Image (cartoon, rainbow, N blue to C red; front, side, top):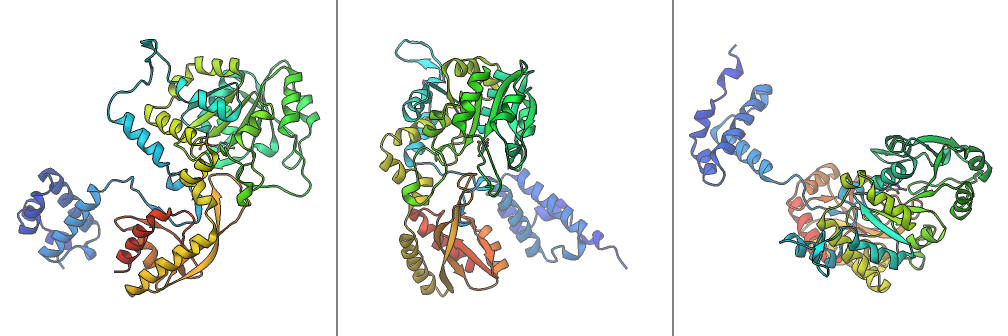
Length: 452
Ligand SMILES: *Cc1c(COP(=O)(O)O)cnc(C)c1O
């Protein structure tokens, strides 16, 4: 029998095919040659599935080129029902934040230039004023994310010293963020107190020694515990820390700036609550419930924030002008809470009445039916995501597609505008809670293309 690998065409032969030569008119020849070589390598590894005809070779090479031209970081529609989905980039930005980014991205900016004084300025001024105003904090600074904020705070106040934390708060926040690991990297030595379910004020008191650099409190943002449980409220912990003469670092996480109780979301403190509880430093994310860009926001005592700014690590964790522009524009919206709830997409999505989702679903179904695509609407429960309101279920509505669920889900993911949904009960469910109403047209288009 002949070795099938000997029948594979050579690179230069494939490059002379008319269909492949046509590709060279659109894409640099080197890129086409690379795609040809890759395609031959794949065929050699799996000869049974190698293209058989010239037309098949050309199609395979064209598909490989198209895939390599596409950006790996693409916009998607989030139909998962998890609004602040970390894998899908967390909070979408408000129009004002996007405009602010475009404005400073285009050219130069007064990032570290004080226009009033005509002298060198500081990037730390851009969001500090608004953060003070909106949260009541003494001072504020912004770093790359909440994990960075925790590392910077610990390193500044407790490097080579002990940081006391409850065993009930040694949690994993996301795939690569475990509180004990992050704390260890900061140079602080972790001192665990209490038990998984119960930690008392006396546990902290007994652990305070002259070696203590800080007491750390981590908000249980992505899980709940109930039953026989006890924790020390932040306010009491702040008093305890003050009596011991050490700062209380409060990793608060969500960045919630507005009380969402009127919309049925209860139980998360706001940033203002966190500051008022008396922690020396409060750390939170910019891209969770705050609804802004990825950032770590540190609120708290002026002398401590000043020390954080002077820590050389701050240079490694600093944010760029795009982040500061987007964060400042997002924060400005909070000066009018009703406007913030309307214009910050994460808040708008979380507070939209389920009736309006049902109406949108009905309109979408009519369009799908007119194009012969079978689907129905179903009530669902969405979640906030992003490590906040872990037990809250938000009434929502989904489009449930007829047909082979795996094929449909795959086709939706591979479309020009990928749609990420979920499979349940043998069908694809596209939850509308995380889809902006302005995106309904694009969603309908994507469903129709995937069904074609
Ligand atoms: C989400 C979260 C973090 C991590 O925030 P990043 O901005 O993703 O670094 C840390 N602590 C708590 C309590 C959180 O909820």
